[in-house]
Picture 1 (tube, rainbow, N blue to C red):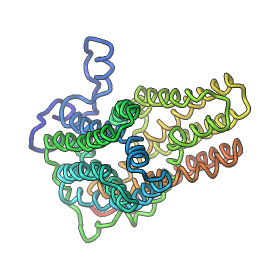
Picture 2 (spheres, rainbow, N blue to C red):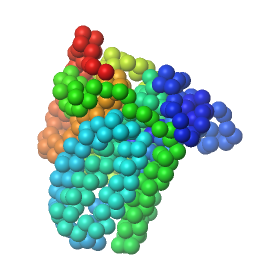
Picture 3 (cartoon, helix red, strand yellow):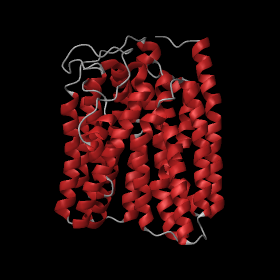
Length: 440
């Protein structure tokens, strides 16, 4: 799931860090292996670390909410799983449209202030699960939670550009490593509550998740004010929605993002229903994937320095994802030990595909956007991944779970195609910006 400048400046008010400032540096050595490992993951003290800390807080809350809210609604409130799933989906799809608008507000009103307000809205939206006792109320809560999520991503983007400058991709890699650790921590906390399986515990976890947004808002108030960049308001209000090359890159990245539901949705069902691998392997692959992302995201992202290299990494990602899906499909019919070995290899290959796509998407979202409209562009870019997130369970079920190994291979070819298309779309986008720069 932001982020004194890298040289250790003050965290109080004043101007934002110089956009051409140094890349987030690894912190110095510290006694103790665990402490040293944690500090290697963090940006230096200052605004970048504060922004990352705010993201860490809300991501812990998101991990706590995963599973907890669904079980609360089905086991305590008494809704059917179908109604819960449909209500969450309807709200999530409708909530996507708020991202570009909130990003536009951040560009024009100041990203820190808009981001703080978004976090405060997250307190109310998340706590809404406690009182969601009908289908339509659940859909409304889901809409608000999704609007907060997309709005947070969009309003955070101008902050990242101001605080990290040309090193935004490197900084986002640090942040993704940190937030993956936060997800695992949140899920662990939520799992303890799930084992207790009582209404008061579920309510407590939901309210604690809501409280993480309040903690994030408090952290964000310590960031310096980032003044909006000047822009031609008459010509820029919805510029991102009419930037066809950028929209093409967004759609391709969205298509590629279908794979994100593999480890959380399709693969667990495939393991249980179609392979002889032990069910405990589901937890194992998620742990392997999470640890590799935390350990390698920063390193893998270092070679992604501009949109061109990002396009090439998307091609690598498509190839890795295709190999992993073919291996997953081949698990059917294998003895349990062979299936387990193939699953481990597929998970490692898949994770590299995920890392390459993640690093590339960071650079594409920032490198192809107008600096004065970073929030609006980030909101539009998020529509692709958000749409994929909403559609992925149905798409993966229809392709992979209903058609077995052939379906997994089909998915792999589809992902390979998205990766192969990316460099062409990036070239188109760069050419239009060189030939006819967008107005500043």
